[in-house]
Image 1 (cartoon, protein in one colour):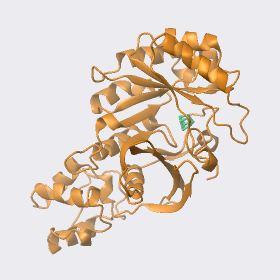
Image 2 (cartoon, protein in one colour):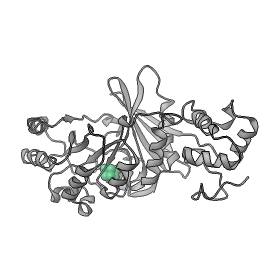
Image 3 (cartoon, rainbow, N blue to C red):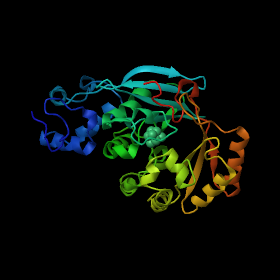
Image 4 (cartoon, rainbow, N blue to C red):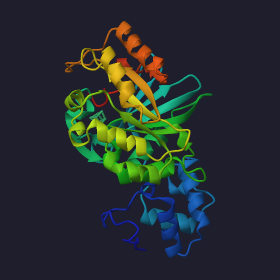
Amino acid sequence: MELSTEIIPKILPELKPDIKEFTKEELTLWFQEKGIQAYRTTQIMRWIYLKRVDSFDEMTDISKNNRQLLSTNFSFSKPEIKQIESSADGSKKYLFGLHDGNSIETVLIPEKNHYTLCISTQVGCAMGCQFCMTAKSGLIRNLSQAEIINQVLGTLKDVTGEKRLTNIVLMGMGEPLANYENVIRAIRILTDNDSGLQFSTRRVTLSTCGLINRFDELGRDTKINLAISLNATDNQTRSRLMPINKRYPLEELIDACARYRMAPRNKITFEYILIQGINDSIEDAHRLTTLLKPVKAKINLIPFNEHPGSEFKRPEESVILKFQEVLHQKNYTAIIRRSKGRDISAACGQLSAKH
Ligand code: SF4
């Protein structure tokens, strides 16, 4: 049986496409073309994403004929964990191997009552942020829908005990909005409460360096949280740290954030990596409060994680606390995020340092 080229235009004809590359709607359409009832889609997706089987053969309530049909037409990718590094603080960094020999990193972070998983969306990144190790390799390629989801599926098998993995942040290697289509398709599976991975949209956060040309679509396509990697309060400093600022300067970024469509009680998180002598002055803190006035905002302060090859330094503790104090005085929620996993190069900005 031939696969419909309308449904899977991007797959090479000689390769069997991975079933995890498809949305529920696409699979339903394909089954309908084959004369199979639509409810089978839900059944099959539950085997993949809820029972987390590794093959069509394990789908015991699907008839043998239909299983045969599936395995003739689709492949079934398995997450390949090549290495796990454990930090003294309990976080774990997973190195996932990809079919073309590339690797990506995913970080599991223990919180008080749950785990948060930081996932990657690209191999490398084209955005060139000066404080980020991932930027050093440049962009190698986008991850597919399946490759994004497989990071979650692979890690879930390793999460045991009472604490559950409830939170996802798209904050690992890559700029999610530069891989928009695959990221949105993966988010749909992650937050599908019926037959997907059942994460709450309130517990999924996409972090961007500020590709504001995608904001309108993003606000329309999903209800997940938005985080902005801000890191400076004037255009000169931000353009030095983050080249994207030359395309979308601060005024345009803040304007796009103020217009961003989100639930009434939601706030946009602004991540601010504090770098000694670059963006950590009291004047910066005051400018930040003024800059964010038009936006419903909360702020995460992230003291810079020093790493070999970087010119930047972490500010003194007293400087970090004074910066936070200014934000508190202006009634901002400003939390100092002490990055976990620094000893295994899993902290913010350190991914792909070795691979
Ligand atoms: S901080 Fe994010 S957007 Fe910037 S280079 Fe690193 S991965 Fe890319």
